[in-house]
Amino acid sequence: MGPLLLSWGLWCFFHSFLLSATVRKRAEKWPFFRRYGRLIFNAFSFLTVLPLVLWTYLADGAYVFRWPSWAFPIRLGLVVLALYLSLAAFKVYGFWEFLGLKEGQMVLKREGILKRLRHPLYTAAFIFLWVRDQTLAWFWTDLLLSFYLILGTKLEEKKLRRSFPEYESYAKEVPSFWPRLKV
Image 1 (cartoon, rainbow, N blue to C red):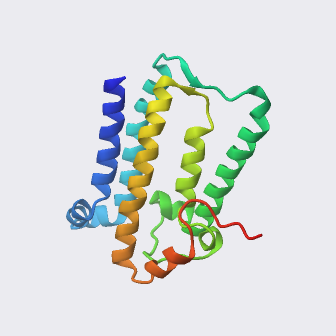
Image 2 (image 1 turned 45 degrees about the vertical axis):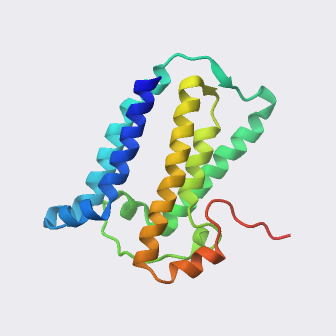
């Protein structure tokens, strides 16, 4: 289990490191990276996470938690919610801009799902992590990835506060992961 979790930890570290201001500043000296940096980053992230996902699935281990069969509608509802959050977020962010296939402007967006939730993709990621049955390998991996999502949120918000002074008031008005329910 140690090498698997260490590998996931290294993936998380390099994922954040490559997004850091220092690395981005150096890479953006080259016009090619200014234009295709996001696409390269996304391709690198995807191609390097695939072997880890496969390794985690192949790692044998007892189940730590299995959803009972009667909970299938709950699981299905959670998956639908996660898909909705993802689609709603991409509608605002622009799917092609998010991937890096189309140039987008760095602006603070507050429309659509972002009026109710600051980090809909992270919320969807949490749901996708925990909606599956948990083998020992996936349980520890999902704990590590959940911690990484929380840490990543803090790092991203720090960057957003530096880039957009109005982010502070936005953060006070709109919750991070779960919308306020009006009764």
